Image 1: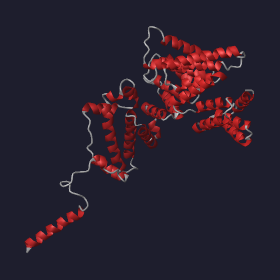
Image 2 (image 1 turned 180 degrees about the vertical axis):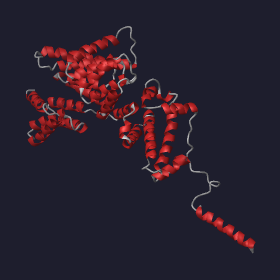
Image 3 (image 1 turned 120 degrees about the vertical axis):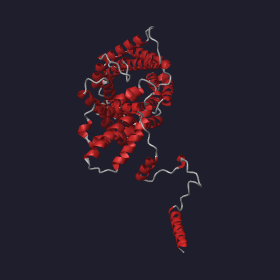
Image 4 (image 1 turned 90 degrees about the vertical axis):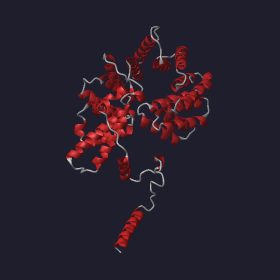
Length: 446
């Protein structure tokens, strides 16, 4: 009797096991589902549980020592001095990423109000920001830095690697204003850092993209005069950017002299032109051509022959640039502008504009110039489409709004013209009305 009861109890337990495992096949009968076929987790907790099942990597003694030393200041070591994939320490980043995520999972389950937990979270987020930056996971790096900053805003700015890392991330995402702020703080608080020349160069890039050319010149000149080098930008490239900033400040003579000086130095027989230098030669020829084009439109140029000579010089420089770098869309755009000045070369202008669009991303300047060319050829519908393409690509393109307004005005659509002129003034106050009247009379007299 007792034997039957024990047997019954065992059966009951077995039945319970079966009930508990119903719907889940035994591993000994059906092989596990491959990892690639595993459905994604339905919630954050599922993701945490799945990560816990993974085998965590471990550091050797030397790897741990290197891991503790790694910060964003090692960026050039990983990416500028060698091929990133062949960097000997790169595997440490992947191990560190897994370990830091595991630490965060554990910390998220602890008391969030505890100062000790908060301090540990800050340290983990900060390290994760540096590691993600070096692994070029930019979005994750930004998120980690922001999490660390939100935990201890005052503490965050006490180490130069935090300024530098955040500046690199903002620069990558082309938020030049925030990048400039981070690099400026770094320069002010730590003026004797080894990477300070690079910081000045990056500040120059930020301000140049913000159209603050005077401030860009200041930092480019400081970086150029420093005896230290930076893998981010060579001295010769810094000088090119100095010339470019002068050009944007309408200091055409200064820019022209600097471009010529650079060109003579690079093209010297003792130098061997390679890779980036060939691109730089093409860029210098392109900018020299554009300077000559701009000089052809200066107010003191009155004779047709003098203007025509400047345009021919511009065409020659741009043709040379095309030989060194045949796939640059900007060169074809500038050539289109030059050919567009001569009525008999309208077809050449269209061909170069088309090449510009084919060889580079769609550009509002190119479509705006195409529209002007169509207008000069008395093709108003084609001009309308080109101007609309320009404002769709860049809704703040003042010149395109101006030209579109003139087109409407010429065809007595005054309400539409007025709206276009208002937008032109909004995006470029002080110049839009002048350019509109200039172009209006140019078209009327054509």
